[in-house]
Length: 220
Length: 220
DNA sequence: TAGATTGTTAATCGATTAACAATC
DNA sequence: TAGATTGTTAATCGATTAACAATC
Image 1 (cartoon, helix red, strand yellow):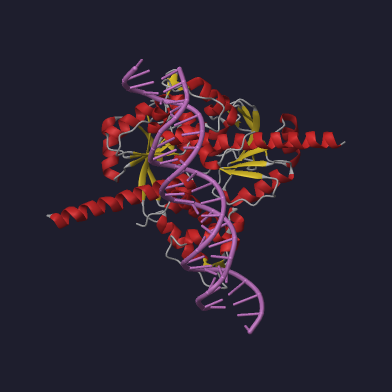
Image 2 (image 1 turned 180 degrees about the vertical axis):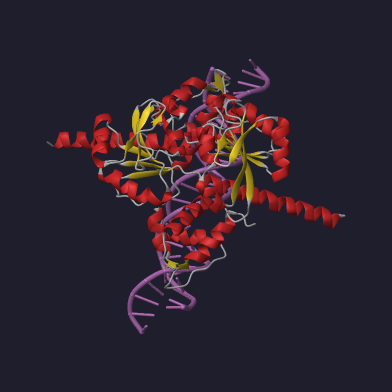
């Protein structure tokens, strides 16, 4: 597996999304660049981390690029995960359409609230988050990844239980900074981060508008 | 508003999360650095973008730092948004606990599926996504931001409608690359991006394990 | 052919780290 | 005081851009 710098990976994901939105046979670095908001030089430079090469005057074969990007992100490789937390978010996640096209399968959904246990979320029954059941599911389906959608208050406790029972990857949908052993990986996915980006953008725009208004006032 | 580079903003969000997870009066750059997985030099350098200064031998006042970070991300400033899409994800978002502490209020939830219209999501009724109703809500509550949680298929169409009616900020929960006019901002929030990060990490770990296994095989 | 586009080298720019004086 | 920690300067490192030869 070739090492690819973090910033490049982030852009490759964006290029992938762009390629999925197009439908022509060939795309040029310039086309991709425009949609991604970067320079075409950067796009070509990023593609040097891939094996796929372009054709002069034509550009890159869109499907070939997509295929390699899917390999880069292991899209085709099947991955079984569990969802922990049977609230609205957990349910939304457990039934997320996009998983099938990314090789992800939710094999079970857990909740520690006995009110939710036993309820159906489409064709999955919410299981009691309890050591023996958890272990059986993890072994049976070779699960090492858990999507954690519980309340902020119980997040760390739940994660501890998961880790004790062999989970080595946490997909963290809570806003909590989780503490885990070295061998466990946390990928943060809660919306706070993008929310703060949004709020700063709105705030920036407001202050710019104020500036513009001030300027016009001065001019008049 | 002081300009802060993108990468620094991303780290500031992480520091904020870390500071929220601690409870001491003072924190040192070293403590934060350890939890964030960066060097303490970098933390101090990042803090030069803020007005808050530390105290030698003591570190930084945690609350003072948090207060300034909250200002940086406009956490206290109230922002009214609408949620578009009344499915599981839309419902999860409309009832998201974290909004209140970030100054965000969901003032309405829309859906174009007549089956969902009229249903309650806690104390909000799902409204019909229709121009006249939309306009009235946007004017009444001074809304410029819409969280879009509709299906991938209808995403672009829905966004067009929103933009035509004055929405200038899209919080995009669909995996679609949206096309919008220049004056409209899109902040992507769908989980595909973090999912691909997760899958690559898992894949990397698997290939490392294979390598280790190979090595031991060779040794034996 | 001429024009368009890739792929790559060299130059620039920006971000991180190393180092350390200041000082609580 | 001595030790710990900040804040900043200088050195390094890495990432982006500029430029252009190759060529379809």
